Amino acid sequence: MGAVALGSGITYLGIYMPHYARLHFHVAASHAYASALLTYGGQLLFTPLRWKLADHFDRTHSIRPMLLSCAVLFCLPWPMFRLVAFWPESILLMPLLFNVAGLLYFAALDGFIGMLFPDRLRGRGLTIGYSFGVVLFGGLAPLTNAALMSWSGTEQAPAFYLGLTALISATAIFLSRRLI
Image (cartoon, rainbow, N blue to C red; front, top):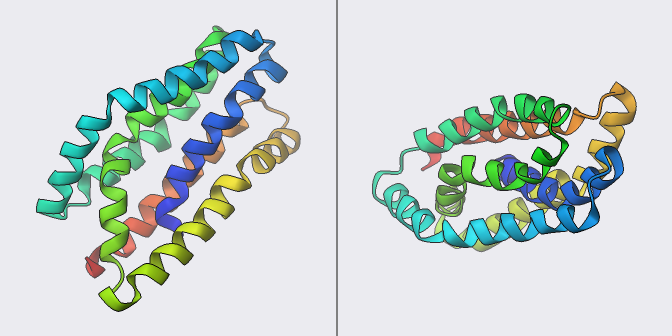
């Protein structure tokens, strides 16, 4: 579950961003929804690189690139959300930027999780861990972000959430490294 926290956090934050940009920063709807097209179009363009990075993980089993992505995504959200105060439209580039920063993490994630379980339990382990992780860290992301904004009084609360998911994933990956 912990290994998918960051991926779920980034994915669902990207889905939440157009609404967030419109509600909190009064960004035009056409611009807000164009950011989704930019994000997913960018992901498509980076797919060949993701395959190469996945092949690298399959050969080396090194978790260092994944941990590097987690570290970058722990640090990056705060300055990016601060930038929004000066340039509100920058919020529309964040989902793509976060996905690019997570490329090393995303490329290795499926192979990494698959190696955590013995062959006979792999299907169940992947299904249960991945599903619960997506529900907990992805499905609840909009609610969690709204609650954090309400509780903290700051519109930059999603930065804390993304940083927290990066920390959770890095911890899960680091602690389970001896299983691969």
